[in-house]
Image: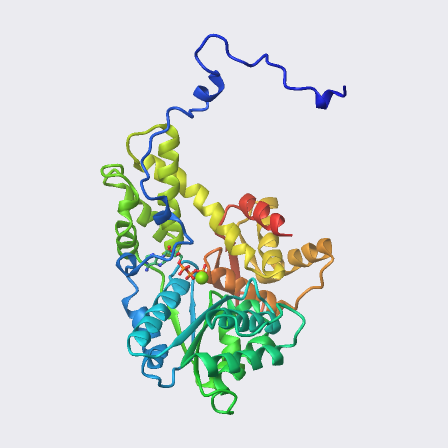
Length: 419
Ligand SMILES: Nc1ncnc2c1ncn2[C@@H]1O[C@H](COP(=O)(O)OP(=O)(O)OP(=O)(O)O)[C@@H](O)[C@H]1O
Ligand SMILES: [Mg+2]
C-alpha cells in the first residue's frame, strides 16, 4: 500500500482521559464570548437609519437631487467624491432606499439598481447588469443574455423595462473611475438624455461614486459639466462622528464587554490619517476578536492597539485592489526608494525613474510623467502618500517632494499580491 493511502496512525490518541492537549494549548477552550451580534461589525452590512451617524447633510444632499423622483419629477444626477470610508456608498444606497420607499407610499414605483463598476467595468457589462437587474425586479418578462450583446441592445432593454414596469429609476454607479472615459461619457449621456430624446418616458437619476478626486476633476471638464450634473465631496469623519458611529453599534457586544476607553480610543486611531469609518468598525471588531481569543473578560485599550495594525494592512490591500496597475507601480517605486535608501522624501522625477524600472520588470509601457503626477496626487488624497511643495529647485522655482505614509514592507507585500 503506498504511504499516502495508509490510514492515520493512532499514536496521537489520548488515553489518559484529559483530551488532546493541542487544543488546550491553542486556547480553544479558554475563549470568551464578548461579541453578541457579529453581523453589526461586518463591513458589508448596510446599517439602518438608527445606526448611521454624522452624515445628515450628505443624506440631505442626495435627497435634494434624487428625491424629486418621489413626486415623479425630474431628478438631478450627481457625482459623489470623497476619501475611502467616508460613507459614500452607504449614503447613496441608504438615501436611494428611502426614495424608493417614500415613492411607494405615494403610489409611485421607483426601481433602484446598484452597480459596482470594479466588477462590471465596461459599458456593455454595466448596461447588461442594469438590464438584468431591472428584468428581475419586473419578474423576468424578458430573457436577457449576460454577455454577447453590444451596449445599444442592453440600453433598449433598459428603456423598455423602465417604460413598462416603473415610474422612475435610480442607477448607482459605484467606483465609477474603473470605467474607461468613453464608457463613463456614453453612460452618462445615454441616461441623462434618455427622456429628452424620447427613448423612455421614465426619469432616471444617476449617482456616480468615486474616491479618486483627480479623476473626477478631469472628467468634470470633459463630460460632467455638459450634462448639468451636480457634484459633492464627502468630508472625512472627525473623531466625534466616528465615536457616534461606533456607539451606535455598541450592542454588537455583550453588556459590559467593552472597557469605557475602547470606543474613544478606536475613534481617535481611525481619525488619525483621515476619518475612515470602515477602519473604525474594523478595528473595533478585530479588538473584540483578539480579546475573545485571549480569553479576556473585557475588550481593553491593549486589544485596540493590536487590532489597529491589522486593520491598516487590510485597508491598504483593499485600497490597492481598486487602484489601476500603474497606481500600484508608482506606490511600489516609492516603497522601494524608501527601503533602499536612507532618505524618506523623494522628488517626482526620482520616483518617475524608479517607476520606469518597475514598469520594465512588469513588461508594462511607461505612462507620461504628468500621469504619474496625477497618480501621486491620488495617493496623497487617500493618505498613502504625503506631498509637499518645496522652493529652491535648480531654476529657483518650486518642486514637489513625496513621502510614503505606509510601512514600505506592507506596501510591497500588498502590491506584489495584486500583480
Ligand atoms: N455615517 C456612518 N454611520 C455608520 N456607519 C458608517 C457610516 N459611514 C460609513 N460607515 C460604515 O463604514 C463602511 C464603509 O462606508 P462606505 O462603504 O460608505 O465608504 P465609501 O466612502 O464608499 O468608501 P470607498 O471609497 O472605500 O468605497 C460602511 O459599510 C459602514 O459599515
Ligand atoms: Mg464605496
